[in-house]
Amino acid sequence: SVSLPALSQEASESRSSFAESSTQKDYNIPQHIAVIMDGNYRWALERGKRGEEGHEAGIVALRKLVECSVAYGVRAVTVYAFSVD
Image 1 (tube, rainbow, N blue to C red):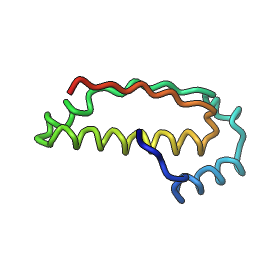
Image 2 (cartoon, rainbow, N blue to C red):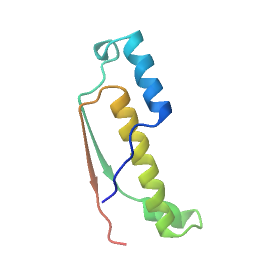
Image 3 (cartoon, helix red, strand yellow):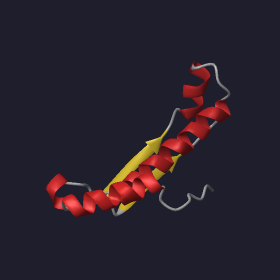
């Protein structure tokens, strides 16, 4: 299990700016986002990297998704991740 730290400064500032300038309705922000993570290992191998580097890149991408979701008021994020590698 990966625990994510508090919102980064950038995401926090983005959230404040968004809240001041508009509402969630103005941009039709979804309440729930679902993601199926697949192919990180394959992505790394195709680029001549170790498979584990693909998993690490997936964690970075997931962190960005969660931070942006929080910043823009998405209420739920569902992530399905699996691996046979």
